[in-house]
Length: 181
Image: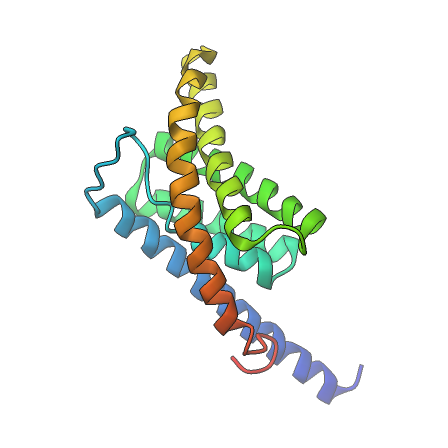
């Protein structure tokens, strides 16, 4: 590799790393803001899932490894700043399950499923991941009876997140993250 080519490659990687760091920061800020919003859903424990905007966007923009690193870094760093161990366990389990389900849904049906559909499935998966973690912690699967109620919330918030991501991707696709950042 020529020196000029290596320099260009390093510049591209640096720009991508900076963009990933910005997305991790945005996801953290959205998570912290979401905790401050006194949302009164009919379903206790339901949240807006604002950080899923960043997760879903990163799945569309980056490789599997890069997008997964955004999810993991966001979960760990947000828990250090504004959470606890139990908060981390619930958040991480939901985020990881949601990430994998959304990623493989896009991989298998990119032209068949919209960002809204992917987001709704991701919202429901996130709730399922959290309930599975809760059932493991309390040693009872009875808590999974709460899933239908959380699914309704996941569908509603997933719709909102999906519409937001569709709008965001429309504008982010105008830039080449490997060149113009």
